[in-house]
Image (cartoon, rainbow over the protein chains, first blue to last red):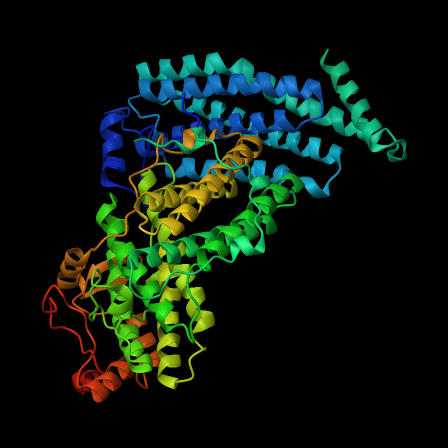
Length: 230
Length: 410
């Protein structure tokens, strides 16, 4: 499992417009068409690019969970962030295997993957960079909101992949369906938990007067979340 | 022998502060001795300045108190390193001697990095800049002789030749022709990233130096020469900074800044011929090792990334100041006619884009101080000043003087 594709891990890319890379690292649309889903008649560079972007999103998700787990004051959230982080790393490995099964290279970082990475970076940058001028509740909520947004996108990626599978040749379709089946229950749980916890956190805050004190609020919120999850 | 910075023990950042008397180091001589000692000093000053300004910019983009504190602590130590490095250079009644060192750095640094660069696009970008800095050295050396009756070789020694490169008036380009494509952060060879970062820092320091010191001379031709070349340095910073991948995050950039400093101090500690300066490089290496670890900790804490997965397992081969005379001659002989066309460097036989032609018609419209200085030297001494221990100039291409340029235009 590669969390950060680099020169040392064998990363490759498709240089477009402003990007250059050493010729040995360059991926071309023609090469992708030869290697991935050969003879399928599909837009293979797009599919390979999208798979790379889905993988990049999972990689960003894994780092988001690591950071969120480090920064939350709530032990229940820590447990969930760590659990989902481990599962997200498993999803990275599943994507890597799926890409290889389809004839691709998991070390390929497509232009679409660069964009997905940028989204992920900026999503995490919000709570990290503004931590000094918000209260603890807002900070906890910001990390949780980042998780909600990331999980929505993650869930949508897997659903889109399932839809794409319908157009793939038989063997490729089986690989995709197997991967989706393996991941889908966990992804459903991630998005359910994130959305419900976000609502619970917000309602708990809304129903308690701020005058009772910020730390008390945080502790009660933590207890409420714990109660909800248990 | 391999060197893995993250596995080394350095000086904790909180213990890196020094007294004013310790920082106010005795300078080296501006003439004689090993010219590359002065080059190493000038380069490390530029590297520290870039690191400091990066840290300030980062601090202005975050409201996280822990990150701000870590940046402030490391930055204060970096500022002290910068003072110790830059105060190794002696004072003088004007910037011209130091300027000669700056341009010798630009020549031998750029040439060495180009020789070692694995990416052909990046190498082309370095070769392109090389011929322009090579020309700057020639024009400033003529100014030095005019101002102080001093030969450039008294500062550079004979390790670097002094003769025309791509003629200064032909270096002016429309801003759009100074932009370049950039490497991709995932695929880039770690050496390439370090090469680009080194050049950005070196050229930026030169730009800043000329921006501020260029008005110190009284003589109008000297002031005009600094003005012209300062504007080329702006072009060079635009050119080199374009090569960096903007996808690299603030924390990743912090890590790479510290790693770059480790690489260079480690490199120079091995090569330094002046034992007193060598001790400073060694001290600063030990400081940078712990600054790197702080950046690595921040990367893990705020981006969830393991620095060991980003950095090479061991330091790349040492950056080395050494003669590049043969290489510079080869590039001069084959690429002086290359020009920028948008994002690319092309074999254009001296032809420029329409945008650059218009720009040159404005800025060169009533003559060039960079040509005046050569004319004036020829008037006073019978010829321009050159240092060509390896023989004749490899081409006979450029009008080196105002009168020759005028003749070629008419």
